[in-house]
Structures are given as C-alpha cells and as structure tokens.
Length: 81
Image 1 (cartoon, rainbow, N blue to C red):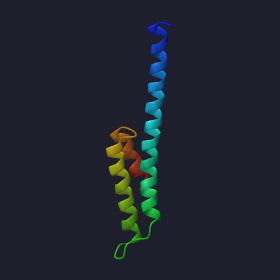
Image 2: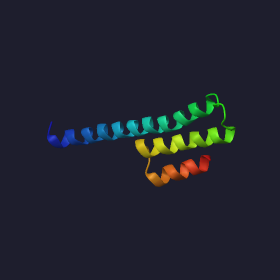
Image 3: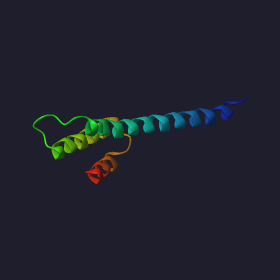
Image 4: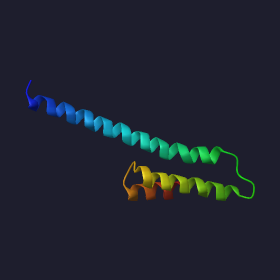
C-alpha cells in the first residue's frame, strides 16, 4: 500500500470529522435558545423581552461556536426574530 492510497482515506476521515463537529455546534446553537425560551420567565420581564434574550443567546453562541460564517448566523437570527 503506497502513501497515495492512504492520503484520500485520511482526507475523507478528516472531512467527516469536520462535518460532525459542525453539526454538533449547530445543535448547541439551536438547543440553548430553545431551552431559554421554555424555561420560566423571570419576574419583572415580559414575554417579548425573554424571547429577545433567547435570540441574543443564539446570536452570541453562533458567533462563538461558528457553525456557519457570520453573515449566515446574522441572517438566521434575524429570520427567527
């Protein structure tokens, strides 16, 4: 087995790992705001303020974890709100 045969397999494993990691990051960016929205609203906050906080959580996590580029994250958060 030559090094030419091994290289494509290593690249394939690397690409699958990157894809799985990206899906994990996306899942966190979706679940965290959903958990915030489903949790009880603190006293003194309106429903709209609590939803806005969940949107901010999604945006901040999207910028930190980077499941997609920044413009995609901004558009997705704006579409949800």
